[in-house]
Length: 286
Image (cartoon, rainbow, N blue to C red; front, side, top):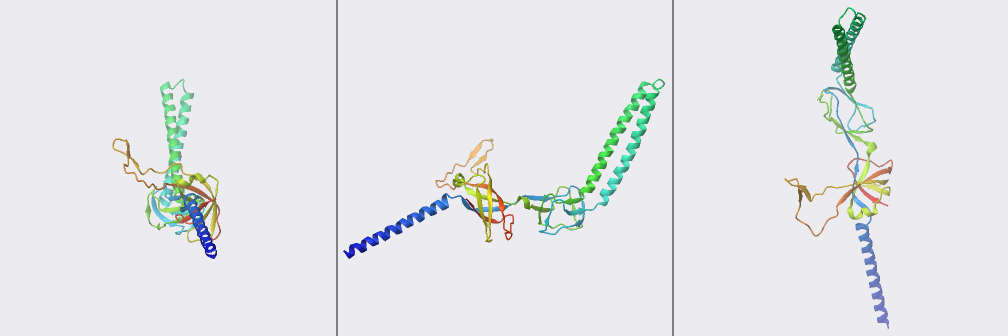
């Protein structure tokens, strides 16, 4: 009787352990395969390449590497002497064209008053000369405005709020218009992008609350799903020489789930959290 009781207890304990193992295995499977969370997430931000609109020698650099700046702050200046001289020349040209236009207008009015004495051809020539003088005056005004704009653009300003990084510019460097000289990280665009397996997308909806933990930082961040990517690259398909689809003929029986980017907006960032573009994060969609 005692032996039978002991056997029943052992069988019961074995069944409980087996049931617990099955339950734990099911929970682990659901956690890793179905629940919408990922360790593959990054802190992202828009990067502005700060480039001058005019060419010249750098006369002054007003920022340091990794310095926070606000929109409209002057980052560096290009030597203004050449642009100031060009503006003076353009303003002088405007005055000259204006005087020519006024003289042409007076000549045209004089010929029109003397139409009984002056031939019609002379009157038409005076009108044409006035029109040409007016166009030349407009061109001079445009050149003056361009010279003034170039002078203003010799001061390169921050287009967004952010942080300057990768700064190596020094006074005396010659820079060319349109060539980026430093990077400006747009801090207003900081966000999280999580790369979720396609099997988990059904459990993710726009607006769902999200908990974010940055690697190496104890504070938890709060956010929400802002959008889900509309497409990803098909690495199994290329375009052949005949502009036809070129499909990889190799098909693996074990298929890895594709990763789809999910954009997450930040709602609550603790004061002690350090957001640096490129950091790794773990994201859990609640």
